[in-house]
Amino acid sequence: MYDQLYAQLKYEVEVERQRYFLTKEEELELMKHNLRYQRMNGLGEMLLALFEKPEGTSKEQPDNGRWVAVKDISERLKQRFKGAFQPDAGTMVKIGQFLSRPEYKFESERRSYGWVYWVKEKE
Image (tube, rainbow, N blue to C red; front, side):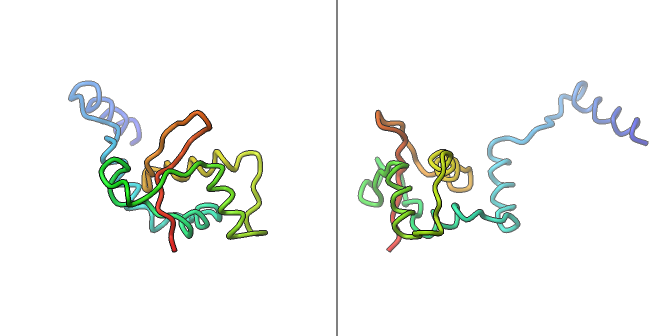
């Protein structure tokens, strides 16, 4: 049974040149669909409690957000969540990875002092 399935897939990919991978758009759509089934980690919940993605880009609508360094984001998390936020050696990377996730994709830039993200602070 599996031999036939494998043969069919191989034929479709090699002979018919069927695509066997998702495009970036399909990947994004799938990730958006799966969001409701994903469990957010504590750091992600804390970040989204403090910040949201501004409408437009920093160039299109410069008054909608501000550039914030990852170090400053970590400091804000410490101030707001006190003992619940325990940064470690990998925290800065984790913050950047979370803000860069396809479902959020905060605008970012590399500066001489590190990565900065275009964010809007929640009231």
